[in-house]
Length: 111
Image (cartoon, rainbow, N blue to C red; front, side, top):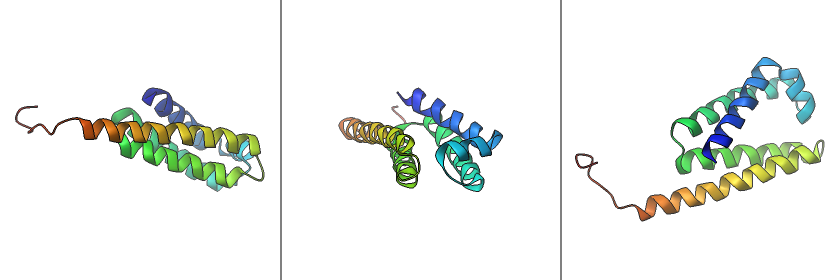
């Protein structure tokens, strides 16, 4: 799941930087906002692919819920998709937190 979210985020990031006008049109935002989303999603995708974990999933959830909020009136289908990915990321955040809590702390010299 981490790879799906990471690669999807990278894809949106590339789209936002390579063709901000088409991302802007599809999301109902300005080209400047589309470029910002591009940079944000490149960073988020890289973070997900490199590390994963609660912070990466949690930030992805916040980004997606923010996109859902911004597009809710102009592009309701986009908003629904963003909210769905936000929910998925939130579930993955909770799972990652629980997994981290259940693992005993191992001193770095033993790991």
